[in-house]
Length: 265
Image 1: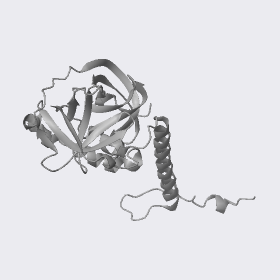
Image 2: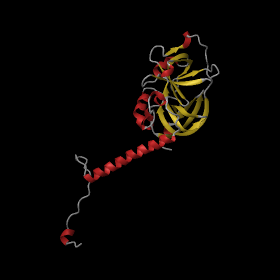
Image 3: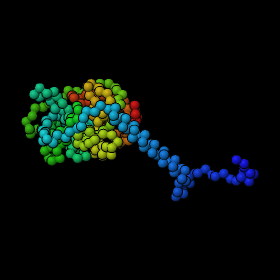
């Protein structure tokens, strides 16, 4: 192709650029932004899908409405979240039940005046694998001091420290994951899970690998206290974290060091 001096002197077509005060994005840049955003969303979805598929599936959780209201007697331990420690009976070992309320609520406020006392809890059981939680009924009979029920005092054994661990898994709200809602995990459930956690439902860590035969851990911060909003961005994602683990009867508690939490393995 022959190029004349006149053609050589013609100005080149300017590269597209974005002006912050402009109401329109240049066509070329608009396509670029669309591809970047699409790729990012697809990548996050693939990461979440791969992470969820790598966590052991213990089947669907169940809200056992078919069993009716269950009555339990035990000593209420308040930290990090209310747990009812039930003594061994009729050949069954001692157990520790996480507690929540009906709906997207916990029982933190209701349990505060009953901490370290023998109580009667009444509600609907949730079960998924080795995770057990009692949804305490909202009426006045749901959570009561047991002093009027003629039950023997029970002083549970001390918690057993299992040392420091590095776990990979997913942070969920124990109530929905236990069977109150489905799927109860993953990005599809993230918004619902955060609402439950914000209102005091116990968070759980579903681990890829077991510790002491358990894959479910009630979560606390590094000092064994309630978790704050720091965990919100990590809910529903595959994450890795370090922390101390302690055993409370059949329940494991993961005291997570929030500074070590990262997405992925």
